[in-house]
Amino acid sequence: MCESKELLVSFLYNEIDPADKRMFERHLATCSECRDELAELGDTRARIGLWTPPDADLGFRIVRESKPSSSARRWFQFSPAWGLAAAAVLLLAIGAAIANLDVRYGSDGLVVRTGWNHGADPATASAAANVTPVDWKTQTDQLDRRLRDLERTMSSHSQSPVQNASTADLTDDQVLQRVREIVGQSESRQQRAFAAHLTDLMREVDAQRRLDLATIDQGLTRLQNSSSMTKDLVQRLAVRTASYDSK
Amino acid sequence: MGGDLDSFNQLVLRWERPIYALAYRVIGREEDARDVAQETFLRAFRALKGFKGQAKFSSWLYRITLNLCRDWIRRERRTPVVQAPEGVDVIELAGEDVPSETIEELVSRHEVGRAVAKAMAQLPEEKRTAIILKEYHGLTFQEIADLLDCPLSTVKTRLYQGLTVLRKQLRDAGVESTFGK
Image (cartoon, rainbow over the protein chains, first blue to last red):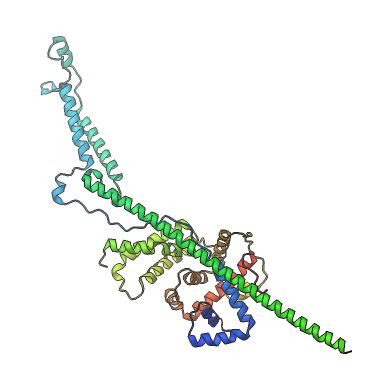
């Protein structure tokens, strides 16, 4: 039976058939080698039980990507790039109105005048007539390019599906609800962390208790052995003393 | 479960720490263990329809985690595990007085934990995994055999050999008491 390490392991973990358990217990009563090995393995188990993983902030959650808004809302949703484009056109129009832009196409070709003085002073008017025509096509192309760049920038910085809810799209109640959820989640995380600490502490206490029990058991066994040896010595001494006395 | 996200996240809440602990003890690296644990739940959610309840949900999660750990070990090749050469009896190796890496003297419980971690990292993967599943997750011999796809007797042999090697490693480090020797 000493060779059957599988039986020893089954007994060690108390995952053993009752009949096998009784048989092994009878064997242990007569085999100090197996008894010692069992105690040592139990001691090893107690020590490795002290190994715990470091604390980690887990909080894993599976989230779905936010679904695209319904078609009805699409009419009233403008992407930021469109908003910027509309703002840019508006600014140009305002700027043109302020600059009193005068664009004419005639025998002289396309003539563009700006400013408020070209109609008042003949000298100025003649000077204005000689103003270099503005290349509208080039400026429009430049504006187009800038708008496209802005659009690309906005799309590359778009938020992840997990945090896709812009508060601009939510009502106050919804924002409040969201904040409550976040606070609740934070509290749950803290509670979980505390529970994990408590579990680790209990496991450590239990492991230490098992270790202490194993140590006490070893000490008692040694004491027992020592006491037996002492008893043997005393008996031998008594016998020898008796034999001397008889002489 | 029908893909109910809230219900699944309740399961995640229940199992995230044990799964992380399993990954950490097998891999030995905190951040990578976190990634493996996260990936476990992602894969489990995606494969949920295929889970027919033929095994315990925890066993299914453990299997995903162990497969990911195995992939990580093969991919990263960072494990400090000392693989015993073929034909070498691990028990004989444990009994020999061969020079081994020195583990610093330990005086406190946290140092004992560190020594245990180092000793465990030096075990071959299959023995380390068997001990982790038994000691820290309380699986039965049969559950471990099913997870690792090996016979029951092999599980017990790995446990015995693993504990014996650990006993020697810790004793050499001055951690374990020299009981009766």
